[in-house]
Length: 186
Image (cartoon, rainbow, N blue to C red; front, side):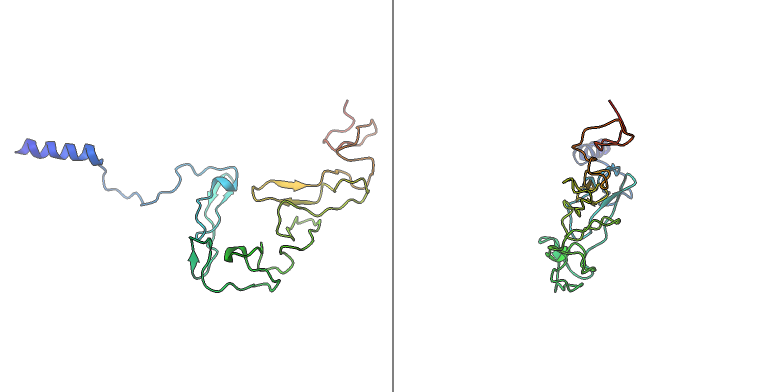
């Protein structure tokens, strides 16, 4: 009889696994929380906020909705107000405003080349175009960061000199004429 009980216990453990009934949480999350881009941290859920990669580790997001959240529609529940009054509701409410607390940031605005690289038009693929030397190439100091975290900038490394751009030929003159980061190569 005693052998039968032990045999039954061994069979059950083999079939269903034996654990200590320990303190493992129901959802322990990723076992490898190292990352190099925000996209590697995305858990696919909307209502718990957008996870980001900070210093090589995934960081939890901030819930976008103060009250109700509709995970099936990827938006906040309840009434959606245009908080900054620019005519565009927040992206978290199904709108297209990338910053609903700032009326100077919404779709349709002109992108400006500014030191903070702010995204005025809510399109991270664009950046303010400034061409002071009128050589047809935008100033490399005008940038925006796209959704993948890549920085997009103009290509003209010296926008005050018309003979300097990424399409120029390098000359032996003490300047980086072709904007490749090297002076007087070749």
